[in-house]
Image 1 (spheres, helix red, strand yellow):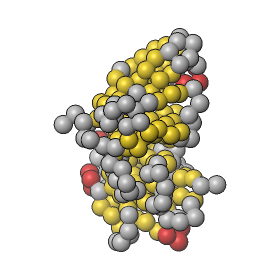
Image 2 (cartoon, chains in turn brown, yellow):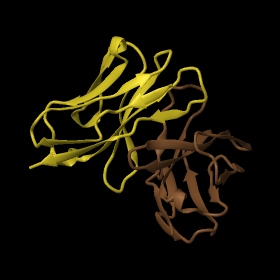
Image 3 (cartoon, rainbow over the protein chains, first blue to last red):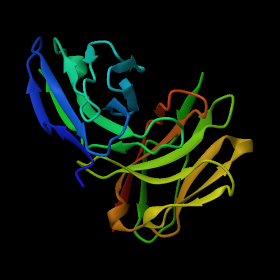
Image 4 (tube, each protein chain N blue to C red):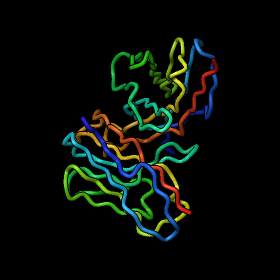
Length: 114
Length: 114
């Protein structure tokens, strides 16, 4: 089972460049989310989606866009990268409909913005 | 403010010694509680969870955690650590009535001395 797959694993960008971090899951999960991990701050929620066509903002959404056209995919877009977006990004997925649903995480994308 | 706090940023223990990682939460109602582990360069793996019932819960890899409502705590323990337990550990909560969003503590990095 592939689970949650994130690509790329590593990326270096220059300030102002754009890019899309990919996230795909093969568990038919309705709920998908993006987190960023920074030292001393744990993981913070960027955006989440409860199904195709439905997205909402998390704790730190500024500078990031998302869309959800299929159940399987939930890409995260950086339209104009900034050094403050240097971080490790994790995608997660779960069934939706109750707080007991366990979220499964991808291996992460390490992004550096110069 | 609602939050999850892990007071210890970094803990070092000797192999074979016991371990306790602290986690406190500040919410009006008791949330659902989780511990995740992140090995170097890896994604997050669920160690254990508490929803209700017995306040001592068992997880994978020999870990256990105890929920104490009076102290708003959910501390993680292991009787005897192994070198392979070196990792970062995250406490997280989900509000029972909410949008299924995970809120993480800052993380505790565990180093094992041989």
